[in-house]
Structures are given as C-alpha cells and as structure tokens.
Image (cartoon, rainbow, N blue to C red; front, side, top):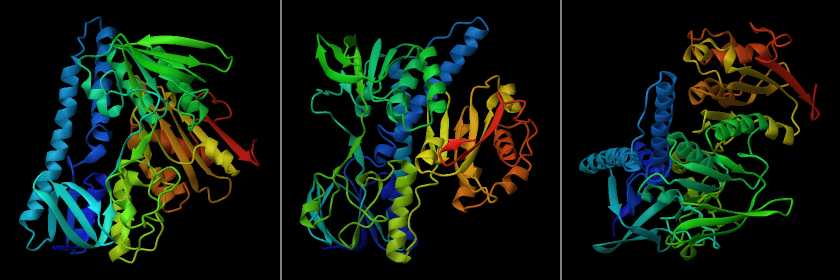
Length: 490
C-alpha cells in the first residue's frame, strides 16, 4: 500500500490549491479527481459563466455602438457562444493538467501523484480509489476533502437539464430560447438574467421570493440593477411564491402566487433553476470515519478542521462562502495548519466579491444593511460615477462608490460597495486597508492615476475626511456623506 503525507480528494480550486501548498513543505501528496480538473471553478461554474458574461457584455456594447452610429449588428448563434465557453473551460483545465503532469515527471524530487477515480474513506487514514482499472487503496497521514458542490434540485420540479435546467445544463440549449424563466434572484440567477438579456434574443422572467432582487445587498444597489434589468426587457416577479412548474407540450408552464392571494399562470420555452448548491459528499464514505455534518448537510468544520483530527474539509463542502478564491484560501490554510502550526483563524470579513451584472458590482466587508443590523456606529460616503472624469470620458456614468468607516478618529474601513465599470478592480486598495485594520488617510492622500475610475475611491475617502474637492453640502446629487449612530442617520 502506497503511503502519502497528504491525500487531497477533489481537483477543483480548493483541492488543487491544497495539493500545491503541500509541495511547498516538501511533503508527498496524492491528488484524486474523478472527472475533469478544475471542478465547478472551471466547468459549468465560475469560469464558464464569466466567459459567457464577457461575451454577452461585449455583444451588448457592440450592439449599442452599432445602434448609436446607425449600423446593424448580427448576434452570433448560441452554439457559437457555447463553443467559446467550452474553449475557455478546456484551455484552463488542460493548463492545470499540463502543470500536474510536469510535476509527476519530477516526482523523484517533488513527491506528487495524480489519480483519476472516485475516492472514498475506508478509515481515518486509508482511501480507496475506484477507477476503470479497478480499486486501489492508499494510506495518508492527513486527508483533505475538497469535492465541491452541485446545483440544488427541488423535489417538486422535474429538472431534466434540457427544458428545465440548472447551471449544469445551460449549455444544452440548441439555440437561444425565445423565453426563459429563472427561479432565484440571488447572484447566479441575476447573472444569467443579465447574460441572456444582453444577447437580446430571449425574453427573460426572473422570480424573486422577496420584494427585490439581491435582497442581501443594500437597496441602492438592488434599485439600480432592477432598473437596468427592466430597461433590458427583463420581467421581475417580486414577492412571488412558485406554486407549480412543469413541462406541458414541450414548454414550461409555471404558476406564481402573490401576497394579495392572486395567482397567475405563465408559459415560457425554458426554465433555469438557481436556488443554491449542495455538497458532493455521497460517495466519500464519511460514515466510515465519523465526520460530522451540520443540519444543512454540509461538513461541519472549525477553521477547516473536521470532527476527525487528521481530516480537513475545504471549499464548497463546508457552509462557508462558496467562492473560488475562498476555496483556494481554505485549501492553502488547511495545509498550513498541518505543517506550519498555523493557529490564526481564517477571516471571512474582508473577502472581495464581484457580481457580473449590468453594471458590474463588487464589494468587500459590510454593506449598510449589515452594519445597521450589527448596531454599529459608522460614517458612509458615496461618490457617483458622473463625478469621475474617467467615467465621463467612457460615456458611461452609471454607478457609484460607497465606503463605510467607523465613526471615530481612526476611521477604520468596515466595508465598500462599487457599482459600475471597473468596479472589481477598484476595491482592492480598500480591501488591503481592511486586512491590516488601517485607517483611510494614506490612501486618500496617495496620488492616483488620472483619469481613472479609482479616483472616485480617493474622492470618497476625502469626503469621509472632510477634504473633498466637490462639497457634499452643495452637490449632494453627485457626492454625499452620512453618519449613523444608535441605528439612526444624523
């Protein structure tokens, strides 16, 4: 029986990162993947959906430019779009595989092995790998579980991944559907709504059980995005309860009921179900070693450690934030706990996020809604994109920066939201301040490139320091500042 210092089960972002961090400590590692390297981080997930969004965003921009100058624009076929998405998936996965195969060639100096198959825990240290060639059992001092997640199915909806699909089946359409209903107005549902409306070939319906889309975000974020969705032809069903959804004569028929007790029946060509994800744990053999699960069915962990001392869980298997960058962070952290005696707790309060919508929306830390719920006293400043030279030059001034700081002399950053072009690139400096628990003075005084979108971040910080170029007390429609104390705005 071959022995390893670490066995990593799952070759997605979290598992791949864990295996590579293990090599940094000169420890032997086996990485097991049952299907394709990259997991949902590459296939039918982050890379796939963002490639599709980039294509749709470019097409929308080109259509708008063509219309502006009186020209016609022909949208490519759906098959051409999906071919480009699959090319991106293949490029990234092959790159990851090439890297691992090169590592295996150097296994005499770098103790690394890659196996294809379905892994299950035999006991605390032994793992059985079932493949086309048979079953192999190995021994590992430490085991890291990183098998990821898949879309959640609803028992009362017959998902066939052809007519009624999840994100795993979105590539199966033969053409752009004439009409599409999306169940779930969270990040994934809203991103796909934006994509299909950008192409301009599909009437999109979006079902939200709440009174607005993205209910976890501030109202000003949701309001702008909803307005853009409607302008782009998206119908939003708010406060809607799905009573029934089924396929009738090849079409999707669904019934919604509303708070006034009225119900309405709709019919569309296709449906996308986007109601969360569930962990891939069924074949792991967790019952053989006693790894504990929480009430939602995810692996229970404490700073990546499971209830079994030498077994760790990272990425979507736990109930932490299901993002590629978080999974990679957790994978690396688990290895550092094993070999670097890392005792520092992982921080989830300064993780940068991005939503691929119209416009791009990014954030880090708390938003206003969360700060209020925590009962914090804070100061918040907002600078609209129409007050930023670069946005004016781009002829795209929709958006804003919003930064929250503590209501004291230190002015430590609590969080930031950015909505508009280049939003995701604009939050990193503020995220760094949060990571080091620093105030805002240095970043406010630093010379920023001109003209650039991030000058809006600088002006936002200047507003908080009462030294802005535009004065909020006379220019509130472009720039403003508020103070919240004891749950009330001053």
